[in-house]
Image (cartoon, rainbow, N blue to C red; front, side, top):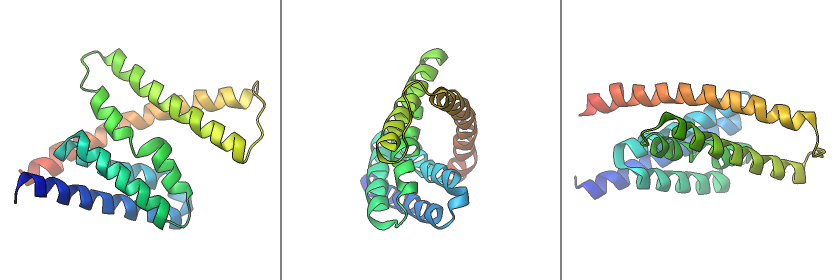
Length: 169
């Protein structure tokens, strides 16, 4: 199999796995955030196997198909706003030599995503005042959870590299 064919095949396969996870997240709402995070692992696998371009294509394809095919739009929206593109940002940021710069990029990315989600929710559903203590608490708790998520995500990526990728080589 040629290299191009392998990349296209893996991208299609990872996109399909993402879509399946988004559909399962729509069916089982109690584990929605966790299942959407699992869906993003397939984007990370695409980046590891074939580079950032493959990860971007998996993210775009799975996002578009998720919006079109999944009845409950919450999982695809969570995927698009927070989880789907994060593996690309994470892997590119972690190529930088300075740990502080890596965390700065990841935290700016998360807070930008949280701000976009906040404004969308505020306009569509919830009426917050701009001086609300709840908003400050949302950002503090969100950043704490994000840091924990990033550590766990790093462990899962390491597991993929050491166990799954090495066994195929």
